[in-house]
Length: 110
Image 1 (cartoon, rainbow, N blue to C red):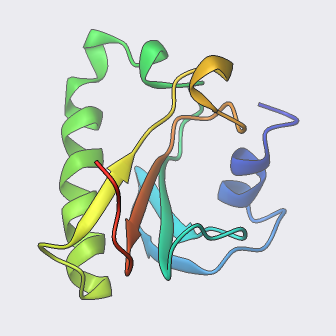
Image 2: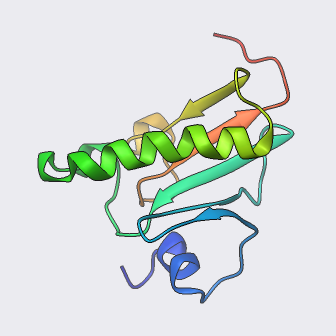
Image 3: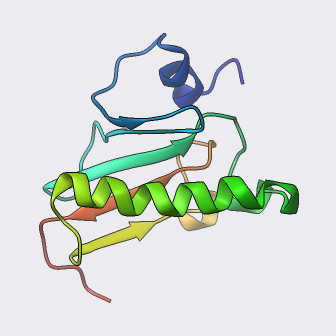
């Protein structure tokens, strides 16, 4: 998507502090962190939210979850992190490119 901030990061048009990257996903530090550790993990291919993840992309869905686990391990937060993905405006989604927040380093209220 032409105006998508995350697509611009994937293309290298905008800077990001990359934590992990492979051919399918990219993980980078959030520029407005809500916790001491706050990393975003995205698919490189644009889709707006989990609501737009088609059944045909089951392999990508698995890849995203496994890379969240790997990024948490790389950050040293295994066993003490929270994962959030907002779907739509009512849920607080600000960037309409599927992404997962990996948060750690503070106490979260359930």
